[in-house]
Length: 170
Image 1 (tube, rainbow, N blue to C red):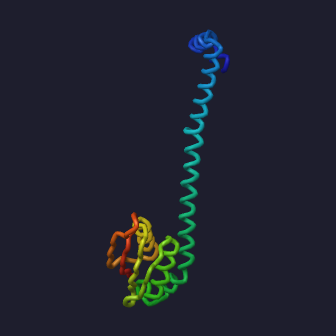
Image 2: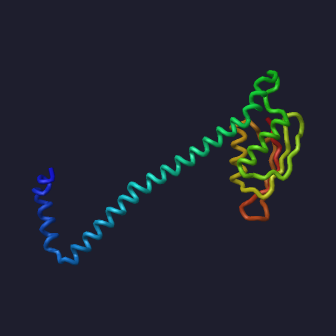
Image 3: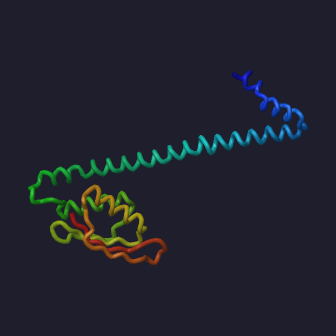
């Protein structure tokens, strides 16, 4: 196969032209070829593989966190399913426990929280990233079916952060 490639007239012509180049130009051409091969290996092979691994590690960590959350709240969910059919959500004590656990996992510090009725709590959050808070609320909705009944969001004095007052229910 290699001999067939060497017999190709285009290849033979390119080799003749290469041999006619001065030694310095041949060395520069070899260095340029070597650099192009390195660039191809980095941007075509290494970097996409590294990015894929990084994305996979992030996804794995998210799944582990979700599993830990489910295991952590297993007793609350089990007691919920054993309760009477008229009780569809978490009671305020279970809701406080679940909301504080999820807030801690999300890196959100609750300034204050208090039960408000049988299935509601009021929560005060200060100086928290808006994106982090929205992710936390979405996680509570998906994992525990916690709804936001009322929300008030104000910008904080610190850039990129917000202060919020929420009423959550299950």
